[in-house]
Length: 366
Image 1: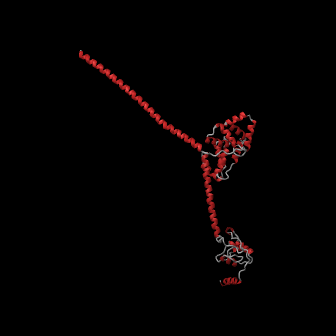
Image 2: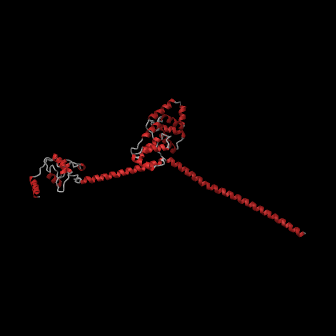
Image 3: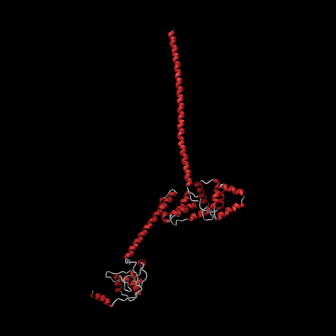
């Protein structure tokens, strides 16, 4: 029995040691877990520090970049009817406030410095007739000042005027200019539906642009404007090409009709006047600069009227003289080269008899 009891005691002792060992292992595990959690927290804090510093640096950089901006100051507001609209001016000055981060309590004081003429007089009158406490409240509240300004200078019948102008608006120049005027009028018509807006817009286009846009059947106003601009650009470019081709054809035709002769700009008239204007010569259509001759070189019957015009300028001139002067590039009046009879100031020179007899003899021999 003693051996059995001894075994039981040893077993109990083993169980106690095993339990103690398990307890120590659990304590070590809890300690390690705690240390792990603490290390994770430290790592997280360390990772957040550079992010915060980068955010701070980026925000400071944005602030510096905004501070370096120098936007254009808002325009002056005169309050005159038909000049810049009060709501347009308020929008521009509020955009300026947003860029420069204007404090709320200084917005009104800054804005009133841009009032001039009628608007400036109105503000002086309001400051005088109202108590200082009320003026201070207005100066401290941008919304209050804005509402007062709109009530004072907003056109009462702006809605009716805009609708009337929209009904009669037509495209006169480019589609871009027409679209700008159209959108400006639409700002004063808040209840203008999309369908009515599209109908009004396309009705004011030029006929050739209107027809092309109507065929495309755009579904949105933006598509309609884009199509109108494309067609307008195409029509403009086509007209330019046609004009250039027309000028080229006109120049070729005029050259074939006898305008190929030209003289150097340094050549002067026999009378000592200034050099001949080549442009004036090229555009001249008088009979002595633009003749038609048959295959034999004589003036045709169809040019009797032109010959009569030449004879009115140079009396007793014969067709032979006209032919000779034409072939040799001589003036029909003085028989000298370098100019036309239209610009000649020399006395009339007759054709020599010998030359006439020679011409007549040749004619009889033929």
